[in-house]
Image 1 (cartoon, rainbow, N blue to C red):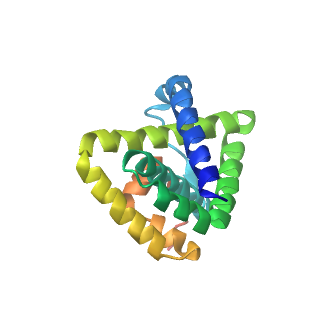
Image 2 (cartoon, rainbow, N blue to C red):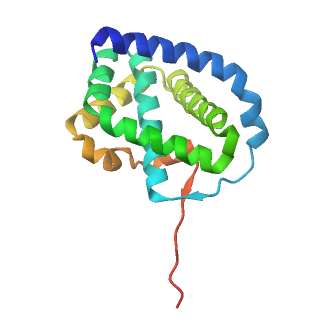
Length: 168
């Protein structure tokens, strides 16, 4: 993927986020207060990867980090594609015919949450984003679970892993 292609992709994604933000807000407002059911470890990995990717996308646009975002997308392309497919499967399982619409609303909410962090933290956000880019780009694609297993990431998506407790 060439840099110009990635930049076009980013611009298109940013426009889509804005359009979806307007359209999806009522859907999420209706869900507030409802607890999410638990999900598998592979679902958590897909959710975490999506939050991380969205955070880096917002950082690319807000902190002039497009070059490092392009490197991230290029380096992690295979694993991001796999996690994206897993995320689609999760939303299809959970919401049936509404799965794609609900996933789009979820991704929009993640982008809005990240954008809110930019507004709240100001210049500190770009320092945080720079450190996040350094950590991600220093890791290998196979280490994405480690890199994305941060409490703030799980807090953003709000899903919890299913835990099977052994009976005593």
